[in-house]
Every structure is written in C-alpha cells, then in structure tokens.
Length: 122
Image (cartoon, rainbow, N blue to C red; front, top):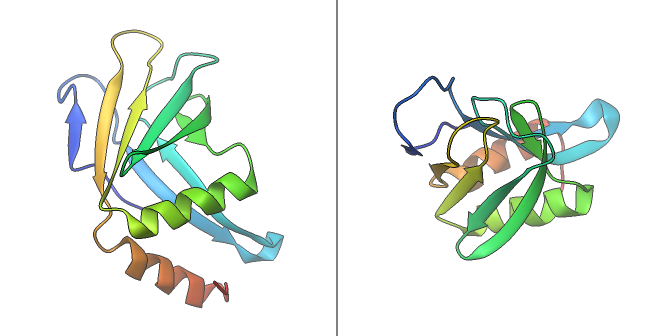
C-alpha cells in the first residue's frame, strides 16, 4: 500500500488516496491492483494509469478503481515492478479530473515480501 507523492489539485475535500496490490491465497487470487481515489468517482468513468508511458484503464465503483481481469492485474503489477512511478488520473462526480503520482521505489521489494508471505511464485 502506498500514498501518492503528488496530488493535483493539491487542496480540496479529498480523503487520502491509496494504491494497493494484494494477494488472497485463501481464494487462490494474486496481484489484485486497486486504487482508492479519496472521492466519489463519476459513474461509468475509468481511471487511467500511466506507468512509464504504458497506459491502462481501470473500471470504477464508488471511490475505487480495479483492473477488469486477472491477466490485466498481472500485467500492471509487472509494469509497476519495472517502473519508477505510476500516474493515476480520475474523474470525480463533481469538479475537474485529479492526477495522483506514486513513486514505485521499493515496489519490487514490497512485492517480493508479500509474494513470500503468501507463497506466490513468479
């Protein structure tokens, strides 16, 4: 789990934003990518990710966004492991789009730790 280094716009009534990659070994699920935007997202909108120029779209519900498939989750996690930052653009129900920038420094090490704890093989 990580918080963004930069949020645009920086002020406002947003709750904290978070990026997460989770494993649920009891359900035989790994590499679940999710982003909590900290505000209600516009219904039917997508959240855009940019990882080193590679772009992905996530579906939204409430204040959160997820990949549409397990294969896309895996592809995003692989891109994050190789990248230096992820830029996340979301559209609120009210107001202009937001852009959150997360550092991926330490991501590979954190992923390795959760892989080991959940017995996930790469």
